[in-house]
Length: 521
Ligand SMILES: *[C@@H]1O[C@H](CO)[C@@H](O)[C@H](O)[C@H]1NC(C)=O
Ligand SMILES: *[C@@H]1O[C@H](CO)[C@@H](O)[C@H](O)[C@H]1NC(C)=O
Ligand SMILES: *[C@@H]1O[C@H](CO)[C@@H](O)[C@H](O)[C@H]1NC(C)=O
Ligand SMILES: *[C@@H]1O[C@H](CO)[C@@H](O)[C@H](O)[C@H]1NC(C)=O
Image (cartoon, rainbow, N blue to C red):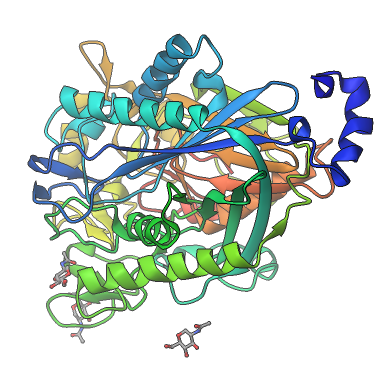
């Protein structure tokens, strides 16, 4: 194929403007496979203690496989689960490498979760994340892995020259910030750059078969938690994004695959009426609240109606964007693929801070260095959030003081040295998770995978965490300022990908934040 020769590439692919030279087009295939797993005798992942006893919607892995004109491959899958475990990513990568003769591997496959809180758990390798299930569920894990592998192999088999369209728009009334006080801690100057305390952009990628003109599928990114169903729900469900996918797929039919992906949803809830005290009905809107009594409410009369409203809003927006999408300059006619995948124990990392005005947790050297600490939960973590209250009435969200009794229990599990506490700054450590091992299984591992998948000028940027609105914006700005970043390039954040280490906040937010493990921005 002539397109393989880079020297000829530019010339020949200019020809694509006039003639549909299939060899110059991106090849795209879409695939879908079931990953539902057990619907009873197991707890949900996301909320600490909900026993499942039925099915609301099935759960799926939705995959897209890509091949560029230079013969490079990549695959992207969105799965209806709470988070990807690094173990899933690792095993899927190895299985694919074996079954495709190395065309796909951990490095060029991105796995991302919709963050539904209504799916069964038990698939994480970190001890802390399987405590509530309770335990690791081998059959469930295997079923998820099989489903993801199957969806990617199907996508690969269906690959055909495709036309790529993109579009974006603002989706209103489908989300609010659930920690508005925390957001307000960011500096006025920084907040002044943005219209609101959440981002509402939905960004859509649409793929059509270039020969038949038939739509193959789409991916729509929009930041909002999968918590339309609340802690009292007992049914397995894909929550709002799962419903949006099913609506879009039944609209198009014919094997169309509609993925709805997460973005920077760390502080974004679909429960648009806010949180109320269950005992006296007053709003839970102080910066330090006992979430134990707080229940957040969606737009509907009950949680299932709220789920359908938020799911339908995402579907309708995606459909609108689909219908008015233009052939993408961003992705281009002959887009090249590239993936960067980095997996490392981050606890010895130190890097100069790009941010000003944030003084915590720095070395005194110049330029100031930020150090990454071993994973640890702060006191506030045990307080939960307004979307899912904590286990004990004792804790408050945003708590900073420590307690002698809890510190005693904490130190029996894994002692906290003064250096550990100093490293975490203002966060009072309530569980030194990154330093606790149970035989050879870590409570929380300190290994963090990060990945960027480039399609033309689109940079899908994956973090194994939940970025708050402002920390996500900072990451986008930071990447765009990186030397060599194309002027017309776009960064699309994709949280909840490839692994899981809880939340990423800004340092101002971190000072009172409830569930931060490490801070990055
Ligand atoms: C959002 O909801 C409010 C209140 O129901 C309504 O007034 C407003 O028009 C809605 N905005 C959009 C863009 O739909
Ligand atoms: C409701 O209860 C909360 C928590 O106990 C309290 O802070 C709040 O003031 C109460 N509101 C009213 C209206 O009594
Ligand atoms: C969940 O939603 C239902 C309404 O569907 C409500 O009655 C219940 O109190 C909510 N529970 C929690 C824990 O928020
Ligand atoms: C965080 O809180 C500490 C202690 O209150 C304060 O000294 C520091 O300036 C705060 N940092 C930021 C970035 O707000």
